[in-house]
Length: 354
Image 1: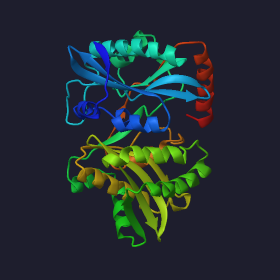
Image 2: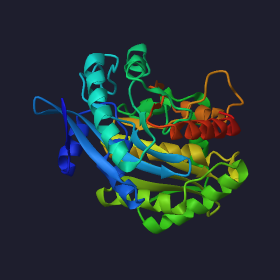
Image 3: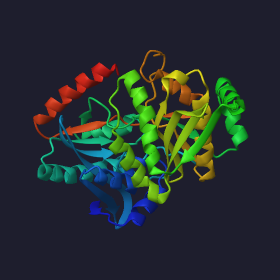
Image 4: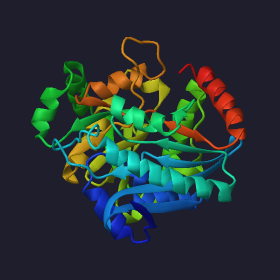
């Protein structure tokens, strides 16, 4: 196996189009977004006998806690599909180990040049004994905090709208219908980048109430602008009595819809507007020929009703679907500086109650 740089967007996107398990974090436009955020990136193709078998977007991340190389939800390796929407990623463990070996050797060289203290990989590979062992056997250790979602709730949306409604939790279906009947509720979309500020205004209300570290307005605008030229993103808004009280960033990439960011006014939790907004986003994904809708991460552990993600998880589960659990984020330490980052992130995780 060997690594080569990929500079052709079509080659990159065409390869990913043939892969089943993937997220927009390995898309060409996510690389463009990172460049807009002034992050250095590399786009690598992994080849065997001149055939492209995998890709990896690498992002240099510079933060107060340290500098590291990140492979977000990658590498993506093409394997034999076992169902219309899912691969059994436990198969091909030997091939995947070779891919990681080749990437790791390259990453070590880049890390030395870029003065990075560790390598972080958050693979979108099924959480299995075989896949976990690949990383453990190569000297990786579990990261103290996730880089990106390590689990996600996903819904196959290839069936009819009526069937999708019937598969929902009874309460979810009822609330959607009640919202549709409510003349005070209006749902609409926008592809106007200026409307990101409307989302951010609502988003800040949620931040002030729940006290979490938000994405900046610049981050949100750049994400929108990175995917907008290819018509891969839309802002959904929900109005109640002519006031915007709900909103969501939804990406449509490679036949998958992603519910990436969302905000709901704290004063409107008893109004079923978020349910109708989500249903309209799912229907839009169907209109765009998506076969899967990804509710984007953070699935709370079972029987932990007080977990910070318990409420959002229950909301997502009501639409039907299943949980996908990935191999946990993996770190490869390169210097003693890594352990300062490790302690810092451990403390941050504890503070968040995760």
